[in-house]
Image 1 (cartoon, helix red, strand yellow):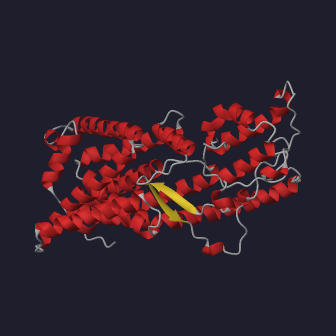
Image 2 (image 1 turned 90 degrees about the vertical axis):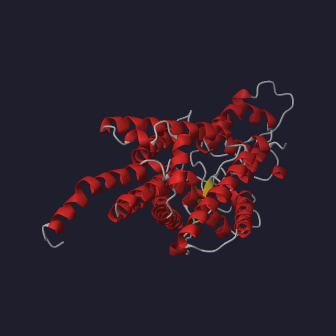
Image 3 (image 1 turned 90 degrees about the horizontal axis):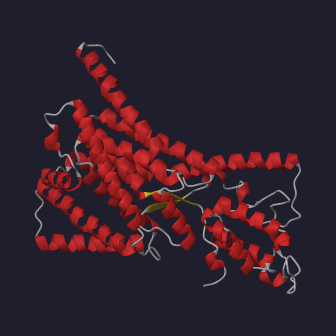
Length: 441
């Protein structure tokens, strides 16, 4: 393993500058204005890149949930995952239903919590994706074929679903050489199938599940001990992607083709104490004169250690415990250290990574919520869909401000849940009463 291999990975778009780059307060204010403007454009581009696939996934899941109904699958799913099934809630009071739904939601979230720690097993992920596309997708197709009375033999159906699942696994997990649109289509299909399956839970359990998941997502991503936080740190440290867990879309900048790239692409740390003392290729020599008989390098390396800790604090906190090892490995080769960091942290040799990544679970539970709302009323479906997209836009706006991984479920889910209950308790009854009374709307 090379020296750089132990530094850790990060989705960092910053580029190192020489130490002679200093700015006055006016220049800094000007750059801050440009940064803010470009960040706003970046947030808009990120939203436009994911709004259509998210909307299409929610609409397809709603359509499938309304038209592809399988009581046998719903009963089997409830028996497998729920502590209290739908038969228990029929004659129960509202308080009992809420308590049972909360227990069911906590049980399912506990399963997701355990799955987060074993999800790094790529073979398990491939197997589960193959089963999802082949068996659950095949079950959905069988229901559609039977409902539409389409004549098809078993051999042809098995052959089609086998090829569909195999191509899907290859497209999702071996993305090299595959067109991005094909990968995106399979990820959307996976989300729709999963949302259709989870949407068959009882109504109370479904709403409790999405609400509990919103708070779980908040804790799992933002808290230091959160499982998703650990998973992201592990991915950054090992430098491995997350196939099958992330939807990736390209950010288009058609509205600002002539604009300069964001200022954060060209700046690192502007303070004198944080700027690398020298930047160059490994052949340019060390930034500090190396002496083999130096007995106490700690005072001389203290400023470099501070800068390195600040670098990893912002871009890869999991590498902070290895700072002393990195300094020892690069002793007397500070220029090579910053050169390797530049090569490690700048995407494609200096090009900015113009993609936005959204967790596939966000697609699934957005779709579960909207499809459950669609089962009640069309206006509830539209209201929840718009609320989800508004929450997603707000999350991406915050992402452009804080430059760190943020949970995509809480804002969207809570907005959509509040919209649904307002529509159900107030709006739908009001409109129905007004129409019954002959009031023109």
